[in-house]
Length: 248
Image (cartoon, rainbow, N blue to C red; front, side, top):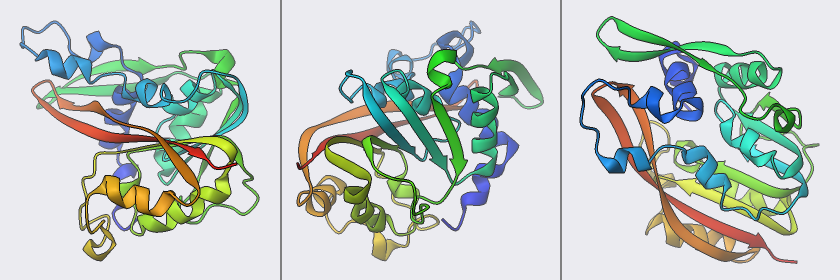
């Protein structure tokens, strides 16, 4: 991941804390700007992707590319143990602070030199107690990580320099009968992924080609998400979400 240092910056940390933990009124304050309905519908992405798992209780979950941890905390509602892993030291440090019950003050950029201070906190302390966070490379996971009933990787694949290697690794991480949720906006960029590593056809076809020998495709859908940069500038994107079941 050659440009991963951008995810160590204070600006990106603030944006992701807002993306993961802010209430809608913090993202769209009452400032008279007529935000479109579709932008409001794109909030809560971390909960929506995790919501594609079954709601039954299971033993172990893994959240790859967990960023600052909201999806990991959401997974823990139905998992006895969840491990969140991200390449960014700054993101993992923040997630671990929240897991330990310490609120984080961060800044929402409004415009120019104008910022608003907000607070991120774990929404469910009991679920948070079942989470652990560690810095790591999704393409070079520690050997004793074990296997999982649920694996979640949202907006990670198109930020890896060799994404097909993760797809090859997934069968060894998911237990037979286990669930896999992948989300990607398919924004293949050379600064993250060399063009020769991009899917030749569509991302959906590429996923099925690489996973079909070990997984059954349960569902394919789309989930929008929104990252606020300033009060008047947002990144609205749509992720392809695929849900898989590991062959028994």
